[in-house]
Every structure is written in structure tokens, then in C-alpha cells.
Image (tube, rainbow, N blue to C red; front, side, top):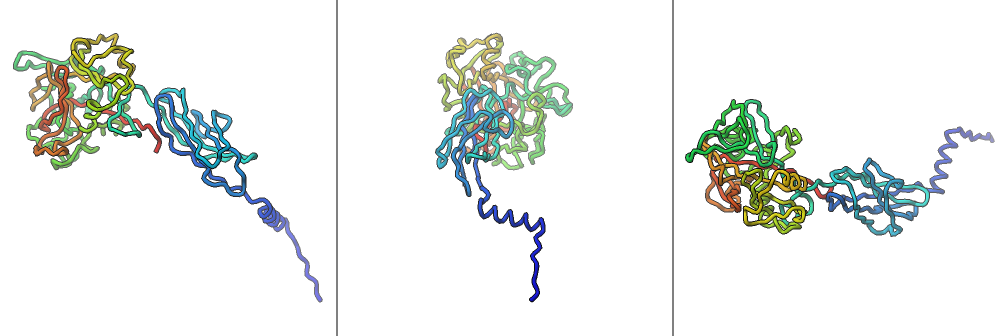
Length: 402
């Protein structure tokens, strides 16, 4: 009988070794999950993680690590627990204001660390506002100045100071002129005007969204010309919202800002809970009449603001630096515009919302919601969409990760 020989090459030995080793000591499969970060504030956040699965190994430790650089490890700040069957939760404190942080969950089997996904979050700035009841997921910041536009250069900007408003240089029926910005006037509004304007018809973002009058310099007195997307029942939407534009001193990128809805403005001004118990108050700032709006966390011991009477809130520029640093916002009384006629800056100021009037059951489809500042009071009202009113934009800040 002929004998056969078994020839084992080096490759064969390697395969056998792997097979024998895998049978003897299976490769560990460990999945760790870093959960979404919630409850983000100016200096704190809630982080958590869990062991999703662990095959072929015994996990002895579950932990969370964090740092300001990506992919933190246990050598960075961390907490741990031996209760690997439960979600590990931890509240970070003493964080830095407006700072990017990274967090990862990890597991340890006595020999090796297994990490979850890197989750990034940013702590909030001072001076934020809630705009909806039970909204745990975001707050807003209000721009530090009314929106202004220069037609000749197609440029958008925020006012240099919160009390600034363009006003009008042509005397009104009483012989008065108003405004704090020299060389500009709302009654000179036109497609090639090289001054600044800040009284706009509703939805005049400059982006063609289907309305006849979508340009910021529009002066038609026909409200139907201002229907967003060509229909009276539409709210502003993004194309019609002034915040779609790059704003040179507001980040200079599109879509960073937006206009609050009537529901959001109402909650902010009439229903919101604040640390001080004050939501807004009438005031004179730099001799300009308007209202101050205090953020959620405003501490009235910083400076005593009073809801009434108006005369007690006569704020100097020196005091204003302190208030603005702590997030207080000022909306000046700016007047209104009809066609190319501007008036009312001494006792009337209107601010647009993003909401059509029919959203709340009105039978006046030509109007849109705004709020009026007058002396020590705020009124929510409907105005014809052609009316030139002020715009104060906001920026969203998430208080949790996606």
C-alpha cells in the first residue's frame, strides 16, 4: 500500500493556531453606549451611559469620561461604577461658559477598556430665554439690536446698540423727527437707497418666496402683496423669514437667526417663569423709551428693575453695561411706516412675529401678528402686512444633544 505524506505549510500552521485559539479563548464583543447629553446649562450638564452587550468577557466596571478634546479616556476626568447592569448617570458641574465638551461611556473587563461613541455638547451662554412651556430641549438668545438693511449694497446688520433705531428725518404731523442713527431715514426707503432702514413689511426677507412684495424696500399698501408663498394662510417659513440672510455682525452666515412666532413671544413676555419674577419692564435707556426683557436666570439683586412705574427704570449707559453683560435685552420704541410715510417713534413701536393672523381664528387674512410697545405696556395685535414694523431676531440654543 502506498503511503501518503501530510505536508503542513507555515500558512496552515497559522490557520490552525487561530482556530485552536478561537475555540479556547473567544474574542470579546463589548458594546458600550454613550447616551444623549441633557440638561445643558451655562456650567453644568447631565451625562449617562450603559453597557449594551458583553459577550465572551466579564465586565467589572462601567464609567463615563469627559474632556474638552475629542475621544476622552479614563486618564481624563471620569466617574465609574461596579453596577454594570444599570445606566450610569452623572451631573457635570463647574463647567466653563460657552465651551465645547466631549463625553464617552466606557467599560472595563480587568484587562481592556471598551469605549462608546464620542458625544459632543456646548455649554450655554448667559442671558437665555425659554419660549415654550415644558420645553426641555432648547432656549433662545435675543439679538443685541434691531435688524437693519441697506438696499444699495444688499447688506443686513444688527443695530450697533440695542437702543438704536433709524427713525425718520422728515417731520411728522407734529413737526417732530426721531431716530438715533444719523444719515438714515425710513421715509427714504427705495431699491437703491444707500442709507439704512429698519421698518419692514411682513416677510420682506429679500428671498423670493412667492409674495409680490418680498424685498425689504417694498412699500405697497396692498396687504395681499405680502402673502408668504403667495397664500394668506402661510406663516413666514424659512424663505420669508429675515433670519435666512447672512447678517454681517451676527455670524454672517445664512440661517443662524429666526423670527419668533406669536405663541413664543406671548410665552416669553406673559407666561415665562423667571428667577426674579419679572419678565419685562418699561424703561428709558440713553433717553430712549422702550422695554427691557430679563433672561430666565436674571437676579434682581444685580440691579433692581421694577415692572412699574416707568420712571423708576431710567437706565444710564454705565448701568446698561452691567445689565447687558447679564443678558438683559432692550427693545426701543421705533415707530411705524405706511408706504413711505414714517411716524410714531415718540410713543409707539411695533415688532413683527412670524405668525399669520388666521392662525388663531381671526377672519382678517390680510393681517399678521405683532406686539406693540407703548409706555409701560405691551399689546399683542394684528396689523396689515404692508405696515413697516421693527424686527428683533433670535438664535436657538439646544439644551440637549440629538
